[in-house]
Image (tube, rainbow, N blue to C red; front, side):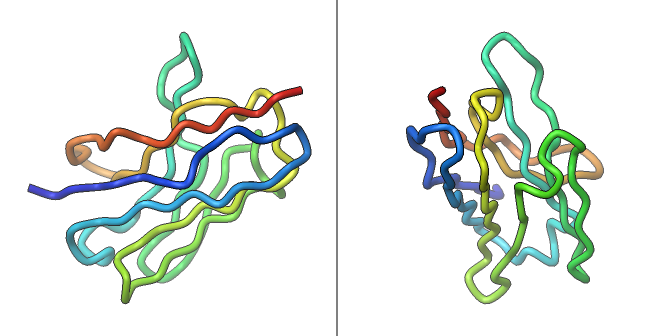
Length: 115
């Protein structure tokens, strides 16, 4: 069973930065395209950033210009660099496939942005 383990979240003031990570138990080439999702309190999970196996990226309008998705294939790890954070970025962040049935969701990593 594929395992996805997110980490690196925390509490940060508005305008600050965080980098979160997602370690996969299999090669990232098997997962691609993959993405970062977030779920705000009382809201559905939404896709905020994605990356193909060749490195092409796509971002939700709400995070474009502030978030950057990257990966380290050797470590089977995906990252999300989040800059200029806003209170509305608060939520639990998960990584998973972008197409097809998702793998079992990890526990996510909580990001809280204070105003």
